Every structure is written in C-alpha cells, then in structure tokens.
Length: 120
Image (cartoon, rainbow, N blue to C red; front, side):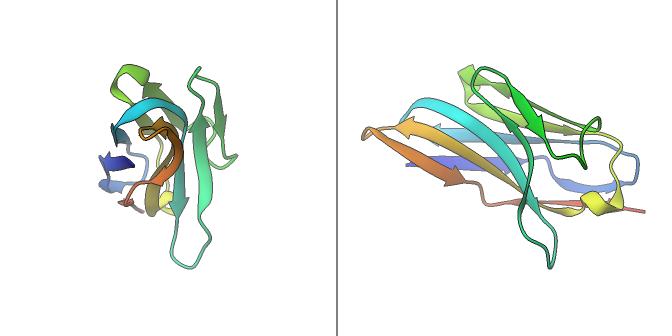
C-alpha cells in the first residue's frame, strides 16, 4: 500500500499564501503522477493541479498564475504553493498519487484531505 499524508492547510486572509505538502510512504518503487484536488461544500471534487514524474504540469483555469505545483522525487513529496488566495479557493484539498509499490502493484492513493479556508 501507499499512504499519503498532507500538511500545511489552515486559515488565511484573502490575498495571502499557503503551501501544502503531501508525502507518500510505503514500500514504494516509484511514484508517477501526483495531483492536488479540492472539494468545496456541495460541489464535486475537481482537479487543481497535476505534475508528472518528469515535471510536466497542468492547472485548472481558476488557479493558473496563482498556484504552483512542484515535487521532490527523492522525498516522494508533492507541494502546492498557493498565492493570491481568494475566498472561492476555500475547500478540502486532497493529494492523489499513482505509485508502483511492493508487492509489485500500481496503487491509486488518496490523502485524507486538508482544510484550506480563505477569509474575505
């Protein structure tokens, strides 16, 4: 199995910044794609940002220019730097990763979610 643990959420004023981290652990051989999703109350979970192992990135239109996803392959960790935060960014943020782990199998794993609240 692969476990994902998120950290870095909290309450911030509009215009402020937060940095989320997500560390993967387990009998990992290699972690491939890593993503951040979010889910606001009453809404569907949506993809916020994604990054491949090679560093290619993809962002939701709503966060382009404000959020930056990055990763440290040596630490099996993905980050989400969130700047110029808006109240509409308020949501539970989830880390997601696809990883090859022992016994040799691809695991599609989710973190437990972390709350981000942006006040106006």
